[in-house]
Image 1 (cartoon, chains in turn blue, cyan):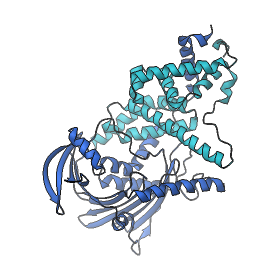
Image 2 (cartoon, chains in turn cyan, blue):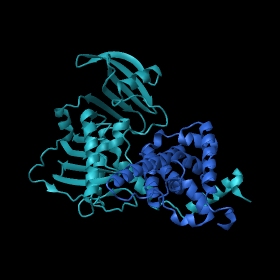
Image 3 (cartoon, chains in turn red, yellow):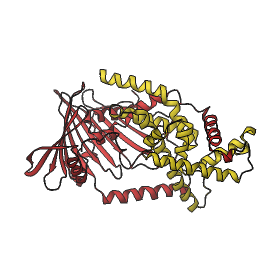
Image 4 (cartoon, one colour):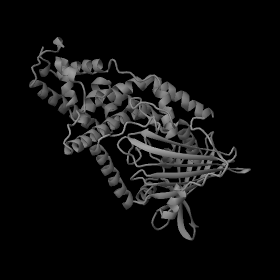
Length: 309
Length: 172
């Protein structure tokens, strides 16, 4: 029979052909555990998207430092150490020029969009985490500093910054200073993408957050995704107090009453893992960006910890 | 902690049940084995990150597989253009040259030559066995669009095959 004339035969042949092609394709055995590791490492980005507190970000930085120096292959996909195990980078002058062009293009976009600075305080319990994050949603430029304070005082400082994604790779650098055991560690890693310019759409609508543009605030109010529960003032500016719920997480958003620009977000996650955080949205001035980017000096006498220890 | 353990257990179960099929889907749509493994891992990472917010993790995972392969295609096209500008030979996006030697290979080559969305519809419908409604939900398009894309894809494949010296799949 000539299958060109019959859709059913063509479809049968397609099903058989696709099945044959896929027959010897299998997921690598360690794919799930690798995926979990990648997910932990990406908590920094996730924290910006859904409002997780600095606690998780510190964990991600820890993972970043600990895994530095590993040398997984490109085929398994994920994170490469830098230095002796650096990932294969383009070797010809033309390739380098191409990459440089792309980076410059991204930087030009960055210059036209200043992004935001978020100052977050997780006040649930000791240790109290404070973080300052600079994030540009359009370019993915990202800097963050975290400090953990216990009852005894400052115990941990962590700083991470991530370059603009180039192709499928994003370069992270991290520094941690442990004030309790007088050690410090520094690490670098390259995470593989794809990295999207904007967060992937959620499967269910989420209430607006500190990164939402004013247009999204208006839309959320008209669609009852957020509800106005009152008014107040922040630094003398009249603000609307909005609330929204994402699962068990309760979000309160304070937006400028005239512009709808978010100024503050408080998150109260009432699941088994209770978290209470306050995030202030600051203008992306050079001084505020520096707060997210600048690492403190390592105190004299501190010993360097191996990234793998 | 129980909540975290429950996420891990649920995720492990999900990955064991669907990891293979997601990598196979990525390979069927994208055509690169190593990249398919990367995509599978990427998809599982995203599922793990969003575990609590997903009503249907499998549908979400399939959608991310398709989107990742779209992104790959766009990236390959962009990079090919850049390479061409530099006077270098572009690398073919899909790599099944050996299949072209067989009749079924010609059919699969015709599949590879389809535009990305049509190829995704065909693979989801006839490779993954999804219904029109499931395919529509995965690709976030209407059922009508699934029907029209399917019809166009089959017609396009028949047209491509008509120019090949192939008459009977039994010889494959």
